[in-house]
Length: 131
Image (cartoon, rainbow, N blue to C red; front, side):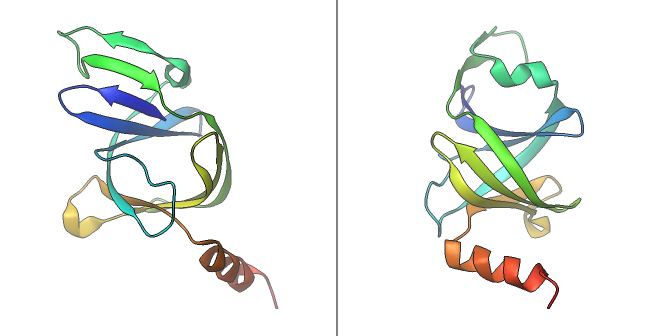
């Protein structure tokens, strides 16, 4: 996760998936507790090497501004479809079950990003297990 001081401050959430970094821009600080939802705007996939980038993107380039690593870690895939990502994050700041799902009513590339309560996560996992 990058903290990106571009035209507007936002956070870039990235998941390594199928050889690229799937990427979303989140205009407000990512939630660390359940019950807070954030809009996330899907942007172009990035090369894997971009995950370690910190520095300043020059004024004349797309995304100009300061980029800092805000959180780093790994994730476990719970469910990934075209319209939904359920993952278990193991970062320094973001830990636990998170969901990204396409929020079609708000626009083509708009998603919702939120942390799932532990109780909800356990209920979902029990429903997926064969009886």
